[in-house]
Amino acid sequence: MAVTIPESIRSTATAGERLFFRTLKTYLPDDYIVYFEPEIQGKRPDFVIIGPDLGIVVLEVKDYTKNTLFQINHDEWHIVSASGEQSVIKSPMKQARDYTFQLVDVLKKDKNLIQLEGKYKFNLKFPYGHGVIFTRMTSQDFIKNDLYTVIEPSLCFTRDEIDPDKDEFSEEILLEKILNMFVVPFRLKEPLSMEDINAIKESNLSEIIDKIERRETILPTYDAVLIDEGQDFEADWLRLVSLLINADTQSLLLVEDRAQTIYKRKRSYLQDTGLSFQGRSKVLTINYRNTSQIVKFAWDFYRKHSVFKNKVVNRELDGEIIAPQSTKRKGPEPGIIKAANFFDEMRLVSRQIKKLHEERKVPFEEILILYRVKRTHKYPIIDLIKRSLVESMIPFYWITENDVSKRTFKKDDGKVKISTVDSSKGLDFQAVFIVNVDSMPFPLEEDKEREVSLLYIGMTRAKQYLCLSYSSESEFTNYLDSKLLERKQLKGGIEKVN
Image (tube, rainbow, N blue to C red; front, side):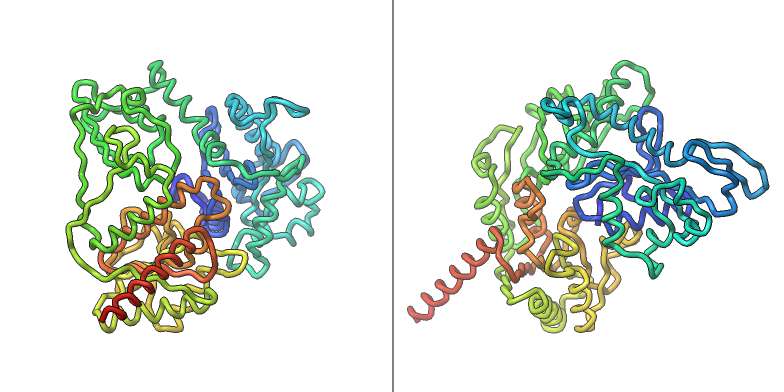
């Protein structure tokens, strides 16, 4: 499931825009970012897609029908409205192309995003393309009306290609077509890094901050601001928030846990906000959510794998990671399931869920299943999770299926919840099952530290019961193998003494 900005589409968007928004969010890879109507120097293209293996694609959405189009060419389109009025507009393809070049001009100002030497010096170091989405016309409409003579087939989508309810829809074709929406096509030799993607995302934010500081824009001020999950705030985000705080109160409450950092951040509180936290900070070390067994298990994993483990003992505020202290509430040791394949893994997980529910009286609504990716090259992960639960007659709700399911999610509905690890922040359940751990660290994620934090976050969602399962090998599952061996040796030692 792709990341969308904003998370949900505005209610006044057209039906076609809402359909395409849902399709992109549901079917694009987890590491893609989809913007709806981002502002680019006063212009707002309908969609901008950023992908590590893609680059950037700008897409315009048109709800035209075959009766709307009176006369078209490569430059201008004569349009007939429902009332019969005619108008002449710029070709949607040309409009999308102009938006693309405008975005490229903005991005070229960042030296981190351009090639600094060679044949393509000063050009962007990733490809960019554009296209048009026709939400009320099918491929057959295009063929019958000779529209493909004016619009390149590879640079447009029709209704049957974006609507999952249509028989002609294909998830593979959707992605492949987006990957080829380039006038001068070339594939990236290496995926874009998180730093590259963040630079693209923030290219317009710095411009907003400069306007505020030059008093060229008017924004509201607030007497007090509370920031939760502050460890994931960029320096520019903190700077922007600080500009909105009442200068007389200077009241900013920032709450963060550095061990839950899932984005690289280079910050200095004093430089970024102009506010001094010295003498005004408090360290909260006691963990009230988890049992001592879960706290120790998660923290041992984090200390073993985090590159920041040496900062745990550092008592400087910037860069400090606080070791959690348990409330001494006891519970069972976290479970570890190693299976032959993902089919067996989910059968074992489903069996454990039923056992918890029937023998330990854990309500289904207090059980959470977490996964890292929706599918791998070997298994359709989410499909097999759902199939196994259905076969075991376990009711479930997929929180991260789409933007609507996220927005309407209710915990107390009597159903097991399913979510990505990324979206589990802020959640807590009596029992948590993290499946397909062998997908971590995620191969396409260059920042292993982010993967460490994600798994740590997932483990600490569990209040009483925690279980991790896998059926293949990765750096993290090798660690779990070592834990299984330790337990086996300890058990053997105890039996020998007895």
